[in-house]
Length: 239
Image (tube, rainbow, N blue to C red; front, side):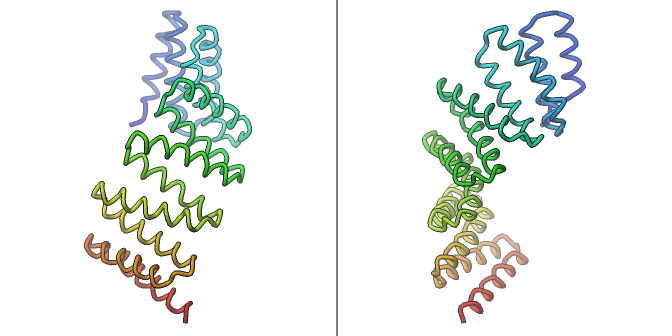
């Protein structure tokens, strides 16, 4: 749920009237996040600049790391990739030193986005793999699913078909444990495409046929038909 921008601005005015640096910094941060949620990156940066100044004045490294992370998001939105990466890495280093798991994952995901935009795909994949290790250690299944879904396109772009195959298998197992049949089907489709790339057509067709069955069980006949068409295409290519 988005932060109410008008309410956030009103709170900032109140904080300025009280003239308490900590309250102003918190209010500035809230306004900046509201602007980020709306894609208004320059306005977010203007408020974050002041929040950064106050965090340094207050000698608040925890608050500063949060501000830097949001500045990195805004800079990414403006296409300032080098500056975004610098801010992200500083925030990540702080979260790692403090052992803040959730913030580490957030920073690593952002770092992966920045690196991918710079066409540094392998480094982006490595950042997400670090985040995935953290999620796995915390036994966060939902977090693992979301990260694997981000990783797979990077593996495919790199031509790492074995890693992509393993990721789809992992995604399918996690989705099955969560009772998410639609994601199970998506994982099977992805697995089928990876196996086809690896030249394992029989196993590819087997995975795709399983996906077709899941889609039919879900009542998604159009998707099942699309899978059947893909199976036909693969057979024709092999002939």
